[in-house]
Image 1 (tube, rainbow, N blue to C red):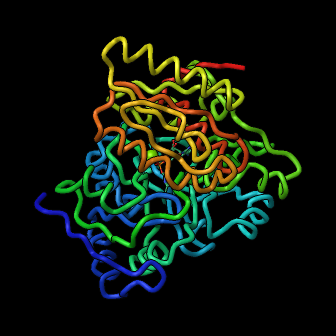
Image 2: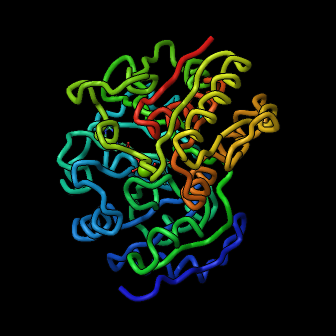
Image 3: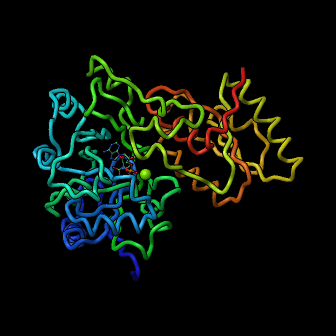
Length: 353
Ligand code: TXA
Ligand code: MG
């Protein structure tokens, strides 16, 4: 493929002509990256098996990890999913459009490659004017994983997409940075009670307000690698963000965490390592390291979610050998932030205090 076309659009009122150019590419089996409220997605026509294969290739994604199908109309879920339980209707009313992906039994209309041969399908309606316009204009359900190369942090800006995928995809709709910053929550409704497979943009607390019972998969709060047999979501068994640097998460009371990080910095410096610290607004001042970055205030987990993936990419550019990260409160979007940090560390977690 040649150069990737970047189409700049307004995030609220996108230029319909540019959206139509992108929709045309999708309809013809091409690959288009687009913004959602969570992260940028890499879209293809979910009903076109050849396009879906090209999607896996462009991302270098393992073929056994299926993408999420994006719809812009509630009726579309009945085309791709079956046995939609009454609970789903309640959840959809409350959370769609928004950062909640629901897993249903699949229908036969969806090609095998799109669901990686599973008997279920993951669906969501994004809350972003550009994403919704693109799906509407393309007249097809849009299969879209996050628009990063496999193993890189999810992209929260069009520049991140360009850095990973320039020359590998046809177009990028650029509507500026995304406003949630972590991917959608994945909730499995093919089992009862519903099971959270991935924490994300819809907080667990919000799901608990709507559902009488909801379970959380052990992987979501895992503090170590769990055996492959215990996965329910293919994404769980694949290594996610794997930076050049080694990531260490230090968890515990803030003052104990700070003291431990300071001694770890000294220990790594003695080994001639270049050390980065991923701190918070309240604590960043206290560290002397090669690179110190702040996720945001500890009282604002939403802001931390917005910054997380961008900062991890920035550390990669700084060529640090080690990234030492403070734990953050696992409430609201903090649960997703902690889940991504722990995965990025390969469960290299130091518990203190
Ligand atoms: O916010 C998001 O969800 C973003 C934007 C672009 O919508 N998309 C995203 O897609 O994060 P992706 O492909 O990076 O993550 C999809 C997750 C993976 O963990 C995958 O294993 C899981 O959803 N998944 C897909 N189909 C599934 C299924 N049938 N059953 C269980 N998990 C499934
Ligand atoms: Mg992803």
